[in-house]
Amino acid sequence: MAVAIDYGVPGIGPDHGLIFDIQRFSTHDGPGIRTTVFFKGCPLRCLWCHNPESQSIHPEIMFAPDKCIGCGRCFKACPEGAIRPDVPGRIMREKCTGCGRCAEACVSGALSLAGRFYTIDEVVREVEKDSVFYKTSGGGVTVSGGEPLVQYEFVTGLLKACKDRGFHTAVDTCGYVPWKNIEAVLPYTDLFLYDIKQMDPDLHRKITGVGNELILENLVKISRTDIPVLVRVPVIPECTDQQANIEAIAEFLSKLEHKPAVEPLKYHRLGGIKYKKLGRTYACEETLPPGNDRMEAIRAVFERRGIEVVSG
Ligand code: SF4
Ligand code: SF4
Image (cartoon, rainbow, N blue to C red; front, side):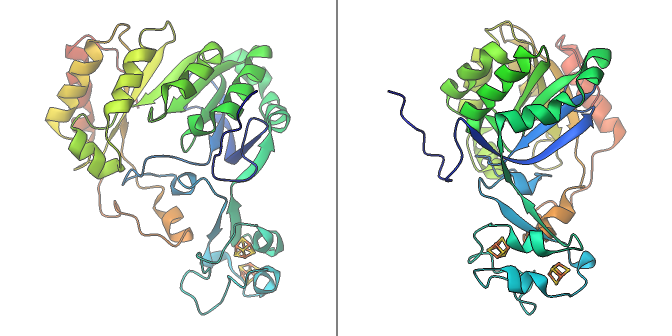
């Protein structure tokens, strides 16, 4: 008899996934035109994360004060008394259960709920809307997050449903999950987008909250399969952008059984506003993006080791 996995959130399981966004016409998450399904929940806490609403595996309320018209409907709608006008950020998050009633009551769009339960059929209905574009562009469906392989039972079912319809599938992962979660999706995955951030385990722990051993081990195992891998390296000043780190990543990748391609990703600060909406502070508020010359120098490091570099 199968044993149900406790995800710590009632409702999450093989039949229901907690998703915070389904983005159509995406061109950054694999080849061609894609639909990217973003899952809630991530075991990492990268300091520069530009999707902070993806980190918690619980639904979360986001508040945009500039959109608030002061109607007061949310105060009345909240069954927990968790919304008060005199509280900084409006929401007493320790009381909030993420029920979403305030967001339903808010007509101005000032309140929104990050995280909604979907069935596989519901997600498939969404991704099927663009199937014609997948065919003409060589695109498909990408699961991302957060870390999609935390909810791997649901994701496995979703990827299988996509493959049954002939869609190309990509899994965008940080790699910090038990191997069994990855193994489950192998039969239904056409491409892995795999993040490598920092080769120094201590520094990795400092900037993401976890060590890098499991991530590197899992990449070695994936590279023994025939599934193509695109390694994505976020270039974040003071976190990942040290010459020694870039050299070490290139060295590590050059020794894998099937050498992956690499996409260095230039840091941007677009996620900063979301931290405010969640009542959190952004650790990389002052960090500036690396210059184009630095990105070119990084490209050269990988190319010197015979690694194909894809433009980020
Ligand atoms: S999500 Fe529910 S509990 Fe949280 S503030 Fe809104 S209405 Fe209140
Ligand atoms: S319901 Fe929306 S617009 Fe009205 S007070 Fe609450 S946040 Fe502001």
